[in-house]
Image 1 (cartoon, one colour):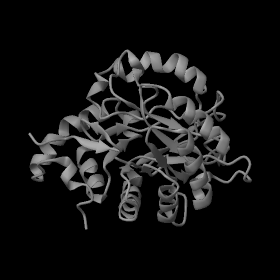
Image 2 (cartoon, rainbow, N blue to C red):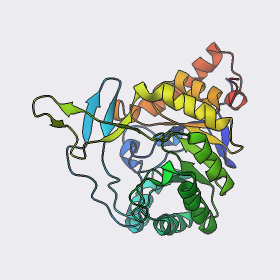
Image 3 (cartoon, rainbow, N blue to C red):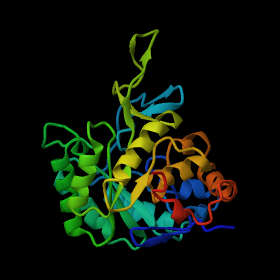
Image 4 (cartoon, helix red, strand yellow):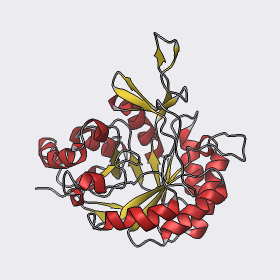
Amino acid sequence: MGSLSVNLCGIELDNPVIPASGTFGYGYEFAELYDINCLGTFSFKGTTKEPRFGNPTPRIAECTGGMINAVGLQNPGVDKVISEELPKLKACFHKPVMANVSGFSVADYAYTCEKLDEEEQVGWLEVNVSCPNVHGGGMSFGTCPEAAAEVTAAVKKVMKKPVIVKLSPNVTDIVSIARACEDAGADGISLINTLLGMRIDLRTRKPIIANKMGGFSGPAIFPVALRMVYQVANAVNVPVVGMGGVSSAEDVVEMMLAGATAVEVGAANLVNPYACRDIIRELPAVMEKYKIENLKDIIGGAK
């Protein structure tokens, strides 16, 4: 059997499959279903400085080929994550974990990242710049190269561990934002976050989601995600983590050919809680089918 291992920012992964933030909780819930140590790693639920209740309900709407969510970063806050969630995780996951961080000001990001950087279990910080900047008119940090770079630089200043910046696809030119983050010191780039979507209830004539709009994810967004991963991977010199609509071992291989070093799986976990385990099990057969000896050799192989 060929090798599934890849190296992400200096840390070896047994395989490139990573459950995406917000679809895998803090891991231990899934550990009741299967041994989650089979995963490359996973990105835990988006964590903020203060606890957040999240958005009003309804927060979920179904769509053809996917779903829309507007959960609103519901989480217990970084202090509780460190004191309560990470000890529970330590009992069932024995690899470095990816900590996903959100913030509403540059200082928020730096505070939360600095706290999580000190945690032995944390291998990487995945910094979600798709949040609204409360000091910048509410515009998302990730829609402007300068704002994304400012967050990246502030986080890098307080961090020893690798920083992977997670980009929003709801922009005109994702490459310029990726380059700005790389120039500001990012050790890696992950993309894409969800696309902005909406559904309307025909009976009430009102948006289904209380927030009106939400993040569209699922298989329907895969071609958009693949295109953006390809563009960014060809423009930066740091590792890229690809995600967006990935739901099979073939999708993982396709993402890696586009330039992804590792691949996150999101909405598929909500449809089938065994999705990531199943994808990892299917990878050797897919590698054999396409005559792939070592997965790391195909990264960026599509020219």
